[in-house]
Image (cartoon, rainbow, N blue to C red; front, top):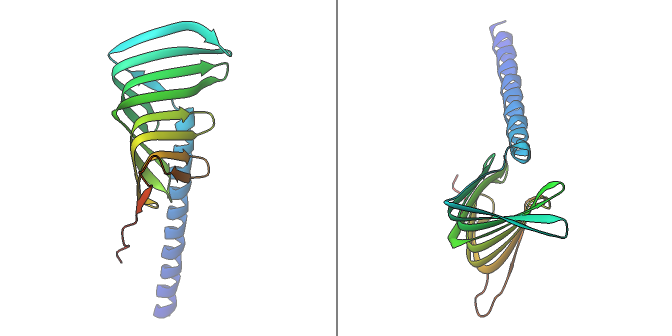
Length: 177
C-alpha cells in the first residue's frame, strides 16, 4: 500500500514537472515571438529625418551613441539609418567600432551576441548581413568569426564567406557533463 502511494506521488510529480517544462517552453517561445510585436525603440545623440522618398521608403538617420531595443533585441552602434516602408521598418543599416547586438533566438538556440563594423538588418526578412571583424557567439554554434557572415534569424542558418585572405573560423567548446 505504501509502495503504491509513493509510486502515485512520483507519477504525479513527474507529470507536474512535464507540465511546468511545457509551460516554460511555450512561454519562452511566445515571449520571443512577441519581440516582433514589441515597440522598436531608437535613441541617439543626434537625429535627422531625410525627407526624400525612394522606392516608397523614407529614411531616418541617427548618430552618436545609438541604441535600439525591441523585446530581447538590443543593439548599440555609432550610426543607424532606418528605412521605413508602408508596412513598417524594412531595413536598418548600423555602423560602429564595433556595432554590438544581442538577441534571444529561442529556448533551444538561446542568446546570440554579435559584434561587427557594419550590420545590414533586413527587419521583415529577419536577415543580417555582417561585415568587418565579425564575431558571433551562441550556445549552439559556439564562436564564429570572419569578415562577411550572414544570419537568417528565421531558419537560424549562419553562413560565412572568405574575404581577402581572412578565412571563417568556428570554435566549438567541449560540452561538460
